[in-house]
Amino acid sequence: MIRSVRLFVVVSVLLIIAAKGYSQSSLTGANVITTGVPFLTIAPDSRAAGMGDAGVGTSPDVNAQHWNPAKYAFIESDMGVSLSYSPWLRALVNDINLAYLVGYKKLDEYQTVSSSLRYFSLGDIVFTNEYAEYQGQQSPNEFAFDLGYTRLLSDYWAGAVAVRYIRSDLTGGQLINGVESHAGNSFAADVAFYFRNEFQIRRQENIFSAGINIQNIGAKISYTDGEVKDFIPTNLKLGAAYTTALDDYNSFTFTADINKLLVPTPPKDTTTYDDGDILYPGGINSDKGVIGGIFTSFADAPGGFKEELQEITLSVGVEYWYNKQFALRAGYFYEHENKGNRKFMTAGAGLKLNVFALDFAYLLPVARNHPLENTLRFTLSFDVEAFGGQRR
Image 1 (cartoon, rainbow, N blue to C red):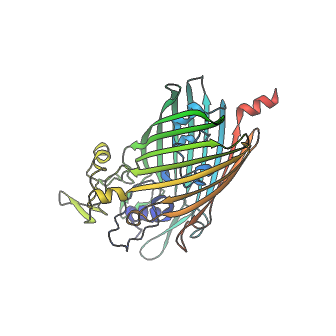
Image 2: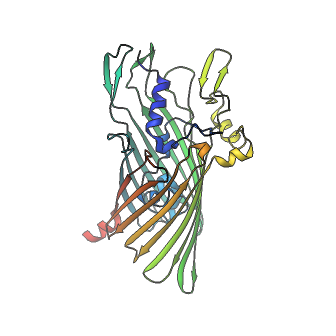
Image 3: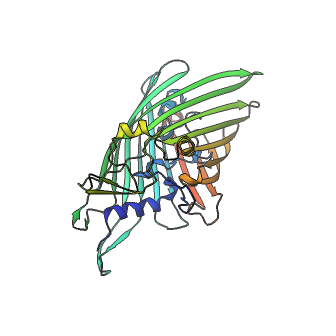
């Protein structure tokens, strides 16, 4: 019999372990939070990925749409675009890829619009029935398209909102156990703020910046017309950064982010029922609403406040620039072993010219034989304003 939609979703989640963690389910007390479309949580660009997935409070760049779109209010260039690409989970398979296209345009001194397209390809999957007979081949994929609006609120503050359309096609419309399946669709929104203060110490420029982004506030997603629906990965992202210039050529940035999923924590009993008829595998709390799930997510962990703290991930990073042209980056990402056990170090580098910028990042897991081993990201950015100036 063709595998069920639920199992298919579980398999897809396992394939994108990097988004939901390399879970050690055998560990005592493990209680990992799962959501639909976890590809939305994968760091798409090389700069933040090189600093341990920290990017909420760092200086503005073209890829701010994912981390904190409010940063666009302080970006220097009038217009820019960027393309990022990452071969994903190469230690397991060779046909999963993530691509990210993003751009922004300043309307005036106070307003900026932005947009991005994230595409996640899960390769090819062959469907068979209970007799191992070929039933067709599909190429599952997921994408998200969003639009953002940023406004400068004062000399130090900016705010932004973004709206997002999400589509997840995991079955290609296959008939699953006699039930018609379809692509999952959802809409979501982000609300973000950014603070930036420039000051001088010993005649050298210093910058303190911080940000908050409540991301993916939106409807649940379903792959059938049934009752079972999954939360999308609503996130609370907080970050801060401090940049100091040593002289006219050398500068350092130190940054840290924390992140918490704003979705219900699974109960310890991993099988729950609703009205005695509908089975909800995995303790997904499908009976809770989206807004209710956000507010209760701060105090619903079975292990109390201690477990709530375990649900917070930490990213720390450092960035060095020489002459604002060459960058080196390093970082560390930590997730508690009961909540996914992602622990990895990162490294990266960047080269910035007048028009183009090229960045790459490399991920090095702490554990051996990890599916994230040898993960690379590449980002090519293009300064449209600088290009226009060269043509004049």
